[in-house]
Image (cartoon, rainbow, N blue to C red; front, side, top):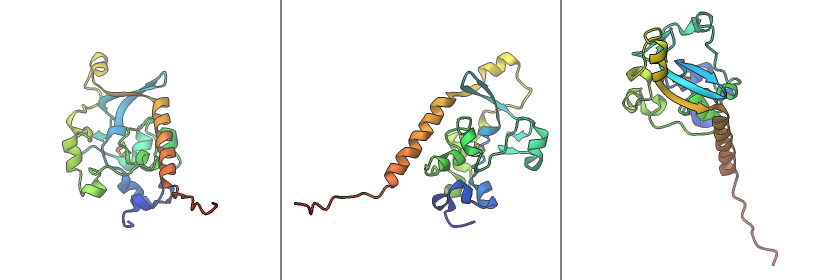
Length: 175
Ligand code: SF4
């Protein structure tokens, strides 16, 4: 992996090892969701393949075949799923030109800080099929508007472009 690649390259320029290392392993994208009337509701209920203790997929290589509604995240699909992923997701953060948070394993060295901050799902997620429908409705962990999230991301992208513009000072030689 190239030194501090997340600061130097865009998503599409990452090699496969860098791409995989960018995932912080929070497991939040592997929680059950409902998308209705433009709102995403995230339940604290794990996907069938998610190992709750490690917050990792138990069969990552075959996940797309085994779980029909599992979607592959690629550099070109990040914009499509940006309103569906958590704000902390490293792919969304790079897409919106935001730095990685200090707790990210690439900066912190491991996932211990994530656990303490409650970023990983291990402390609250329950296995699929363990809750009744009513219990599941009470185990909502977050909810947001897809369009609002997209607008916020677009704003972050445009603000970062403005900040990246070189400052042009008038020399004032005309007088
Ligand atoms: S939400 Fe993003 S960073 Fe977290 S596990 Fe999913 S892909 Fe990785």
